[in-house]
Amino acid sequence: MNVLQKELAEFAIVRKYQSRFDWMKNTPQDSVHHQEGNVYMHTEMVLNALLGLPEFQELSEYEQRILTYTAIFHDICKPDTMQTWPGEAGRISHPRHALRGATLTRQILDKENESLDFISKVYSLVRFHGYPFWVLNRENPLKDAIRLSLLTNTKWLYIFAKADLLGRICNTHDEMLYNLELFREFCIEHNIYGETKQFASEYDRFHYFNVDGAYPDTQLYPDYALNIYLMCGLPAAGKDTYLRKHLTDLPQVHLDGIREEFDIDPTDNQGQVIQISRERSKEFCRKRQSFVWNATNINVQIRSTLIGMWLPYKPKIHIIHLHKNIGQILSDNAKREDEARVPDSKILNMFERFEFPDITECHELKVISC
Image (tube, rainbow, N blue to C red; front, side):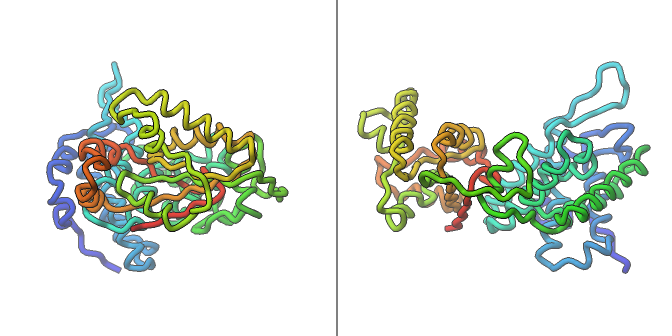
């Protein structure tokens, strides 16, 4: 099937963020792995390679849109991360450009009022787009591949990686194609090609990702002493509203409530608030009393630190992620009473740093798009 060549500028999203894409035109690439000229040229080549793949054309319209946006944004942060190699002419790298690009892509698509499902799927593909070429060389390739199957669609990842390779001029094409096909065969062998890894239980899944040396196909007896519900969401996302309707019988560790109780301003040092809240949560754990931890919990480091503190008490960890697009967040925040309103600058700062919770962090993940 012949596919008409497309230019990036044909896409409204590219024209809207033109300055970003103009920067890509002025960003050179590595002389060994990317001889296309610049990042913009490579991106356009990848897009057209993708559109021409038979595997892409077999996808649904929605799936095609996900992969098309992945192509558009996959190297969006190469300009931000470019580093030249001292003493080696033409050698260039872009460390962590995929993660930074995924973060920026999430922000852009959120501002465009795309659905959470669409945002999260494009985010994951951009974040992991390079994995198929080298994941089998990692220390524990099976664990990494299983994680990928939970966080993205490995078939889509393979299709996009194939387009990414076809959209470049390099001296290592055959080696990279070999690695890519190995990735596909590895996923097929372990029943995770386009499929999510099936664990015996949520307990086994959590155990596998949070206990060193665990195996993916064990069947352990669930040993829970209490339930902990960890709220996750920006200010004005609706956490308190949700809790007024659900989990009403459980006590809360509410950071805003502790600030009010001890008359601590949100702009003051929060060390005392954190200390009190953690101690209260551990008191509940010692009593085997289920509870709600009510705070924004916007990134993995915050969530993993808390969960690690609670794990010795054998809790079942539930993460409840409440999402609204940022425009709605700011609008709803403006309608709050003065004492409850959060400065827009603070919300936008948190929005930029937000990291989606995922199923490997907890036993149960509930996502509510408001």
